[in-house]
Image (cartoon, rainbow, N blue to C red):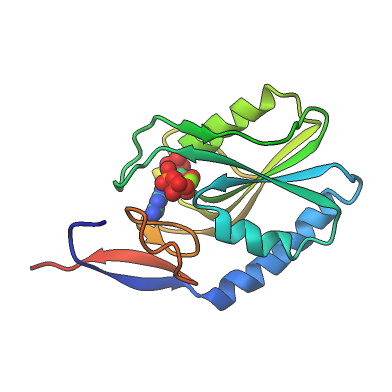
Length: 180
Ligand SMILES: O=P(O)(O)OC[C@H]1O[C@H](OP(=O)(O)OP(=O)(O)O)[C@H](O)[C@@H]1O
Ligand SMILES: Nc1nc2[nH]cnc2c(=O)[nH]1
Ligand SMILES: [Mg+2]
């Protein structure tokens, strides 16, 4: 649990997220319209809300799998050590894969996870992230689709936590500490 009091300012409303996901899903359908082998991979835990909304907008035959990667613990800074805590259940060799992530910040998580999954020789490997904070990048990484580019704010909600709290907020909010 966070140990300093804070408030959360709305940064992106639930309505704006839903509208953007409809557009992203159309672009994904166009990219993968030629395959019946698409596996949509959610990175736990942060992407669980985004992937749930995204897959329901994608009108293609897909499978869903999950991989759990963690690098922040309960803090606000990356440890730069991406731990794979749970691997995929299925095989991805020769298959088309879309990795679904909540946010690209330093870039460590998505760059390590894509390198890790590429070793399994998927036919095509694409990435989508709801949020991108390019100003914070420490390793080069560009997702194939981004929902929103955001400023240097520590965000929560819509699956994203602060010390495991606030994942259940329906919007993306920015954490603001209250000064005493
Ligand atoms: O680009 P980066 O600096 O690597 O940051 C992005 C990652 O950080 C968060 O995960 P976290 O490690 O907090 O685990 P969680 O998904 O279980 O919340 C977030 O969900 C992304 O996966
Ligand atoms: N909660 C939260 N986790 C992150 N992991 C990487 N960036 C962020 C962020 O802005 N907020
Ligand atoms: Mg994560």
